[in-house]
Image (cartoon, rainbow, N blue to C red):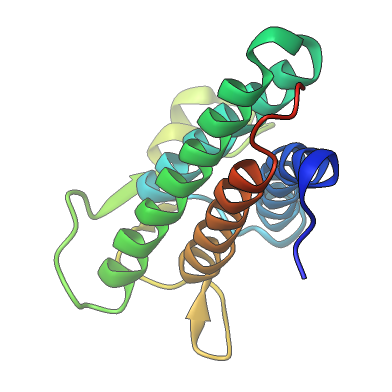
Amino acid sequence: MLPAGRAAWKAAQGLAVLVPAVLLAAVYVGQYAFALYPCEMCWWQRYGQFAALAFALLSLLARAQARLLVALAGVSILVSGIIGALHAGVEYGWWEGFTTCTAVAVKGAADPLDAILNAPIIRCDQVQWELFGISLAGYNFLVSTAAAMLIFVLLRRSKGIAA
């Protein structure tokens, strides 16, 4: 059973902060601990989560506009999830993407030009990691769209509550 009133508001605001923070932490652990470098479409998904986290954190400070900021965080999370669906479709060959690859310069190289020229090419249409047949982009779609919908429902259930 979903909360209502002030509890629903706090849950919506908490999710708006927690979801992008956890998702961004997870992809950075994947990137720096397991060499799962982002392709261009991965970055597009991250931009939505960065925006969501900024809106959500601002909602903690700006009481007068907190509901609007949490709603914008929910929209940003949803946009990231939709981009994740698009990316997953490209990875599974359901449709063609806008771009196919990007290169990531390796940190700490002695010669910057050599690092750029020998950077690994990260293709948007190849799955780097999957669990139960679902890629990271697919999980972003599942988690982000579900979280965004829950944030919107909780905001609706908290209507009339001052932030």
